[in-house]
Image (cartoon, rainbow, N blue to C red; front, side, top):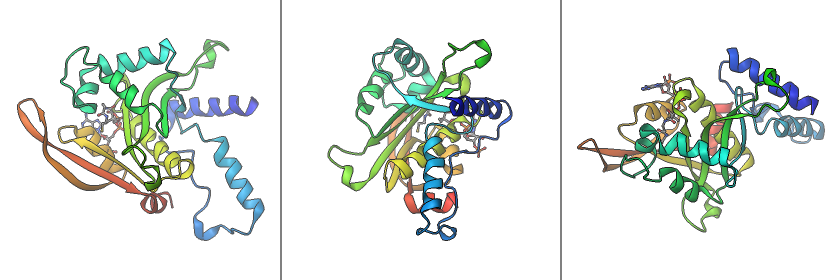
Length: 241
Ligand SMILES: CC(C)(COP(=O)(O)OP(=O)(O)OC[C@H]1O[C@@H](n2cnc3c(N)ncnc32)[C@H](O)[C@@H]1OP(=O)(O)O)[C@@H](O)C(=O)NCCC(=O)NCCS
């Protein structure tokens, strides 16, 4: 309990002035660790386990499909936001096209399906709740394909929280979760060619551009490619040093 409070406090502090870098990191590079040292192994795993549902400014929790708060967030953040719909789904950008419902259905039973939240503002009292600002999931690429250890990443932020580094923070957290906790070998995704912010984000996070589905999307009377990105476990390991 005390530990949790401290963590929220430090998350709030970094929210005010934080760099967006992860608190959740591998504790030491593989060449420095001694696998025979039980002490060190225990230390590392307890450290990382305690921080599993946090990144520097955010906390992560499961989506509650029965919760009006969660459903309301997903509907307002995605269905009622043309930028969300137009960048996330193949649906026409129209009100009521149920992009959120499709996303919710698609991600049910996924390896990971979370709301990224700002920590509760304790100054408003003990009842304060985390504020959802984004959604992320690691979905199976195909049914019955878990043995390939490959997942598709999906992420969306509510409009007021875009452009402040939260996207990179969430994707970094999902990568860490996927490779450390999810046992994955590869994380991939496709970005519509007109989604400059997402293209910039995945390139800046050092995903590899693996290919394109050429002219697969019609947007504003133009054909656009779907740009496919991927990151392998070995590449992530090098990045985290
Ligand atoms: C895509 C998305 C998750 C990115 O998250 P974000 O918090 O807005 O992005 P960040 O602030 O982390 O910035 C990511 C990169 O985009 C750049 N960027 C920010 N605003 C931008 C804009 N308007 N145009 C182009 N690039 C932009 C940032 O500079 C950063 O690049 P850098 O690290 O090289 O400086 C978010 O904008 C979103 O939810 N968009 C709608 C849904 C969507 O597109 N999902 C992804 C589908 S694949």
